[in-house]
Image 1 (cartoon, helix red, strand yellow):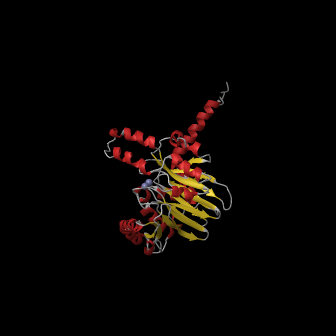
Image 2: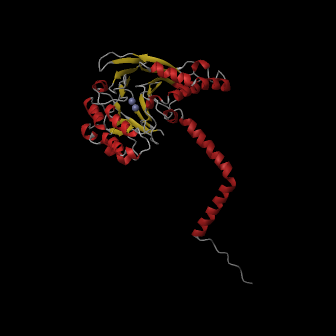
Image 3: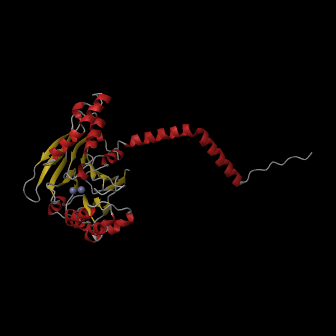
Length: 364
Ligand SMILES: [Zn+2]
Ligand SMILES: [Zn+2]
């Protein structure tokens, strides 16, 4: 009797066999596997919500955009950690989610600082106040520091969130969300009449925050902020044209976060505005270059103030690709020879105490 010969599978047949078995297993066990995977994703994400900041000065870009729709950039927002203290400078639309995802503990935010009251800088204030209250079961509202007018803004958000606060207390109980901690308290400061007037708005455990006038006329008051901590410093421009006051208060800073608008790019939008269904676009794009700085203006400030690193944020117009960064910057690299970074949502800059080091990471 003839013996049957058993053929061994070739390499291709082996691969096909493995693919069939794996696919079958995935099909049969897909739900249990997905659950295991989901559990790990949740654990990973929750563990990232408390970034272990070391002593020093840190600045996270929680929003680098402007009022113009940009799917990759939230409205202007910079989260600053100085030692154990967390501050948020401006809270643009969508920035609260970035603050959380980047690992800044919203429940521990000590103050929100507003540069001015244009909608793109305050749109997220209600959400930050809510997250800070509920996230930390705080008993007192968050301080909202700003120039004169901040009272109106905070009153408005407190009113808008009044019913929401009631719902949450009724639902979660007053231990989890103490009723006294909802909302914000306006902390207005006054500035002198000089064009370069400044005032120290907060000084605590080695952290010094100075507000100074910038030029965003017809919007007045408008300020920038300087943070100093353990020999390190960073400056946030707020919205401004080229400003001698900003130059004065940026002297020798480690980091300068400067807004920027490309005039020729905005002009290009203006030229094509008739295609848009928004009739006001023509006028708005004609107006806005008059109260923002160009990338070159920011580079001049960085050069004259001898800052160590220039970071652009509040970028106008939206840039659909990083390939456009070079065009956006124009001659900036000729005017400032130090390092230049185009800010992107999620970037984190860290300045260890009493050193020259500037570390950069991405947290989104
Ligand atoms: Zn503005
Ligand atoms: Zn703005």
